[in-house]
Amino acid sequence: MTGELGAETLRTYEEINEKIKRGDAIVLTADEFVELAKSKGVKEAAKEVDVVTTGTFGAMCSSGAFLNFGHADPPMKLQQCWLNDVPAYGSLAAVDVYLGATAVSETKGIEYGGGHVIEDLVSRKEIELRGEGIPTDCYPRSYIETTITIDDLNQAILLNPRNAYQRYVAATNSSDRVLHTYLGTLLPHYGNVSFSGSGQLSPLQKDPLFQTIGVGTRIFLGGGTGYIIGEGTQHCPQNGFATLMVKGDLKEMSPRYLRGATIHRYGATLYVGLGIPIPIINEKVAETAAVSDEEIFTEVVDYSVPSRDRPIVTKVTYAELKSGKVFLGGKTVPTSPMSSIKMAKEVASMLKKWIEEGTFLLSRPVEPLPRFREFKPMPLKKYEPRVRDVMTREVYTATIDTEIREVAKLIVKHGIDHVPIVDDQGRLVGIVTSWDIAKAVAENAKSLEEVMTRRVIVAYESESVDVVATRLTRHKISGAPVVDSAGRVIGVITTDDLAKLVRRGA
Image (tube, rainbow, N blue to C red; front, top):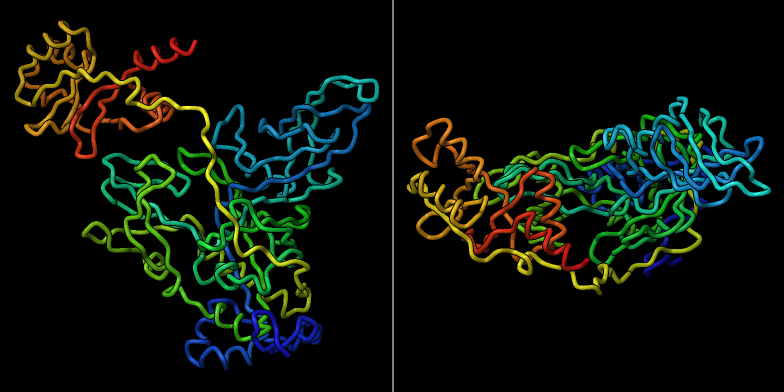
């Protein structure tokens, strides 16, 4: 008998499920199967093992829950809804809302968000519900304020549009400032590499051809049973970035495997435990299930470049990433995971236990996932102003050796607030402002070196004005030098320049 992709069938779903019911199924975690295949070879391992269990536990921002509250008396149609001050999308049916994991509290900010509310619901904690609506004849109420628990809800369905990325890029930072990203805090000058995903434990690494993973596959989700309902958003399997859309009953899940979290200075999220059983139906599946961390590669990408197409610094294996260090930029750089390898192992082990106990049967997919999807960026059909469009090109600079008095004259003569400090090649080495000069005079400073700022926030002429405006606001500064790729000063952009742009558009 021949299975999918021309591979000879070793065992069917029905045969495996019968063995599970009898307690005879041989189940290994992905880690265990990799080691078995190394010692005995894939062919022999495939003959011995019925099911391989996988696991991942990481920040899955594209997660959320549909909640149905039931009707109040008198009833209302929720237009806006807040759960513990976190907004949920309410413009669905009268008392249905969708709570996104990355929504943030209107009182606590990113320290508490939708992911935290989901964890609190699963923990059976009381949640404060506040809702507003437009009164109608059949829904006369306009406001409601009450408390609920998950057991008060008719339905609480975890429905995650994009989970379990097949792999992630790893992130580093070549700039001279700290960056805060969805892959964690990145230290300057290639100070660290941050990565996500569980490598050889990752579900989609074990069956990248989707022979056993598809619509209807039963999975471990958040400590309960869930199902794959289709490809995830941004599904791009041809480049090794397949994703899954999954659902499950939130009432059956555990806060151990669903945890709200805040990524420092980035935002709120939800850590999700997800595991998929891989039935070894043929040797082709066994081959991919045996792939090890040493064979799984990903790119290390420089996140200091504010572009969709960030430069690739190098390629590394998950074995290197998990070792705690990689070689980058001529030096050994520490690595750290954003996801928990320990919890991923626990998910795979828990799923193995369920199957061995006969409480979890496998389901054959009713439809395969697509093996190719065109991955398109957002089209920008309206011109967005760039720094080059608004920056001041006539920039007045000084060197470290310039006297403070001369810099003060520059500021007064030209009515400027920012004077970049450059070396003899015109490369930026620091900056002083009119405030720095006033302080220097007040404190009787002897040189610019005593008062200038060395770690300068800069802009590039190709950057979007919107991105630079956000940067100025974040750092609470009124301007930044514009530099080229060699670090030479070619202009300056200030809040005054941005204000002129706004007035032109008015």
